[in-house]
Length: 205
Length: 86
Image (cartoon, rainbow over all chains, first blue to last red; front, side):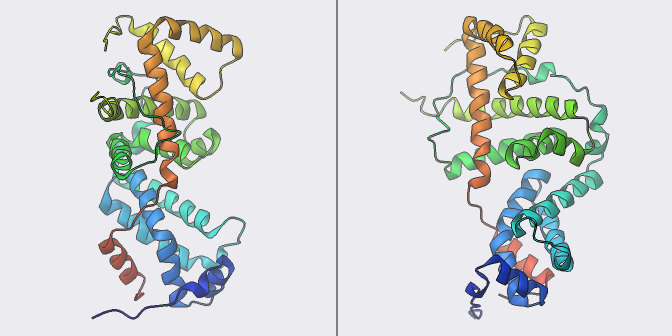
């Protein structure tokens, strides 16, 4: 049986959406979910690299957001606020579920022999012009998921979320030099993981 | 295609990659940058690593602008958890 359609256009502006959320209107909550849940889930999945855990982070993010909507002061956009909650939830999930994540502070913070580049073929792709098609998008996400959590999280916060070295170090309770080394190791590993796909791309000539 | 770069001097490779980190981050002073460019010019494989590393970072920078979809079952479980109906 088709479900009744809800007109969410009434919440097109963020202030109208916020008013609706603060008034406890269920449709406003539905609108919040429709608008932001896909990206919150994608970001959570990137951090924790597990669909079930990412779904848990997604649910906790929206439960907390709905509970705390009165504390939202509007200094940032609603989306930014939600993504910050999701990032914190994902980090807590990683600390809870992955003993290695919490203890890897003692990891040798140097470029390891295993990080050294092996695939030395050039890549024909020009990222400045290349549209991120679905296949390439999938390759990027899969490579990210293969990194150990300690490297992946640093890479996601710095390169994708655009946090500064200082902010990343504070979020992860790490030193800034450790963040820099982990970021570089993550980049080298991702380069290697993508090389098998991107070095071949357009190589058929 | 060549595999001429065999990491036979691991310490030097690690040092060069360490410098590459600062180079990619834009932290390297101009004179140091020049020093780094010399070994890169001498080593085609090092240039490939530098170029592909830069491309890796550029590709990931575009990731957050890529539209994503929420799997329908994930969405319906979320709405049930929040006591919403669509």
